[in-house]
Image (tube, rainbow, N blue to C red):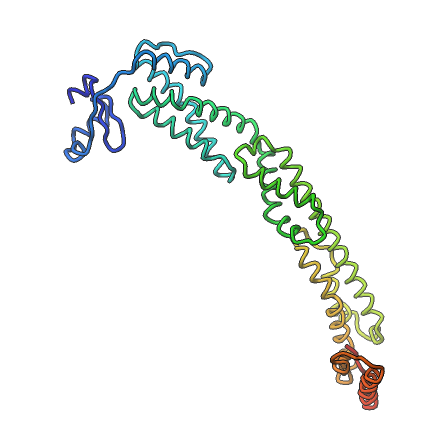
Length: 347
């Protein structure tokens, strides 16, 4: 304790360097036998004037002005620690912001924060030597922090979120399109690369440009698929209304029958995937036939029978004789059903 009080040794306890005998850490150290036994002590080594002069040059490089006093190790260390307080807070806040928005480059800021903490909490010698060794890192980190603070406005953060969303959603669908222009594949690759760079904040313009190009193409294809689906189901509704017997139904029956087709005829929302729109389009003939069958059952009831044409044309037909035989079988079945007073639904 006497040597520590005289400034001749430093103590290290629980990963903390203790320089003052009257500090809270020192009282805890000497007040606990187990803590004292685990502590280490080393002679305090004074830094020569050359290192203090070097610290002055490094300080000027980082903060833009010289140290007010380089006559002693204590004065230099105190001024360095004082100057590092605000940068540590700013870098720590920016690191939190980068992490919360899932942006790259957080490790660079965290490394600078750790260096500043070690300067602030270490011995005078460690503070000076650490600052001299890491001043370029601190200078770059402060510049990066300032650039990020100027760049990451709310509109910029929104643009970045939208760009990531385009890659995570629209691009996953677009990249499977067989007729997609190669320039859009290149745009997606470039966008992914820019978003992954630590210097992403310098690339906001091209990031927005590439994301917009991908979004535009997705919207175009989505609108096209939606329009095709709408046209197909509107045509289907018209087809159902031309089937003989339609006018015999009540308004309520007609509305109920057409309701599913009209649902698919409505313009698709942005959240409806292109694949689903195309699937609905492919399903339109089958769905239309099903509505027609339901309509005919309402009109004719038990009189309606369904004949599947494929049953009479199974396998390949290679000769006119085979064709005639298949047609004959189909005709005979239709004639038999008609003779029994049935109404035939061909499928």
